[in-house]
Image (cartoon, rainbow, N blue to C red; front, side, top):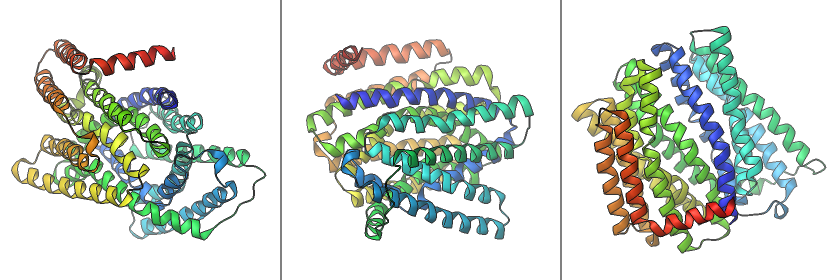
Length: 455
């Protein structure tokens, strides 16, 4: 099946990114002091909102080309859409830089500098992902993290600067290098085609994409609200510990995104309900087993970067959300998009973000700690997990799924509270692998058969 090939292709590229992410995720916080790292992660928090500044245009392009072959699209208009976005983002960049100068906010100026390269790179990712060009897509995915890794290693081991600004500048530089490379490739690939801007197409991209963008913004709020609450209600050290935990979560979610990215063009072309149900089971199993990687990170943090040991409780709580996170991002969100249910997705995402904010406020009033905020974040993912089933009744949670999740929570809770790390690791995986094989024996056999058939 082409989907499986694409999954493995993107997954393999994300393994490389995970390696780069692990090195970046541990070297930078180990090298910088806690307060410098907290300032650096403030910039990272800002950067998370760059994607909303195309105002849904990229999402509209993504929906427009989803499930199509490259031969089916009008290249002249594609080049026109690209040209429009470049000028549009240049205008947004200028406005953001002026705002940063007026407010005397250097981090806002740095944020503004990243707008153009990041959102054009996002456009390319969306185009090649929508068209199913995963060979190109995977190269784009690999470029930025690995270039950033090389530059960070240079800062740490050659320049040895204990200041967060060089690391911010390295981020921006890597975005621009990748941006320039992608521009050269794009114009070479479509050399000979004229550029045609159709403003009806442009407006339609905004019209379709704005609801996806609002939903994406709500998703960003869900992913970042916890850090904003920590930043404004707790100490700088708490913020550093929490954002470090968030960096570790990102390492695993980048692998999860390999599933997310490949599903959309498949679902846009065809939707076999039986296959979608099976994929949900696979995703659930992957999410459960991914949660156990917490023990690996506990070993790394405890052994090599002891000053962030206070982050371990936060990491443990957030890792429990992976079964819900992977199904929401890889399945539910892609189903909303593939079925052209942009408004429904927007409503759901906004409702979940508002619920999370309310949960955080309640948690803050009861016991304002980083662990409480992490718990509220994990809870909202499972609320969303069960809420979206109402839109796709054929994906409703059966007895087997509920039993599997209950056993997962119990074993995970017991395991993370065992002081001996090796015993905890063995207990979690031995029990969950056995339970997985008992409850999903047929699915495991089919998956193994598919993997062996690929070799």
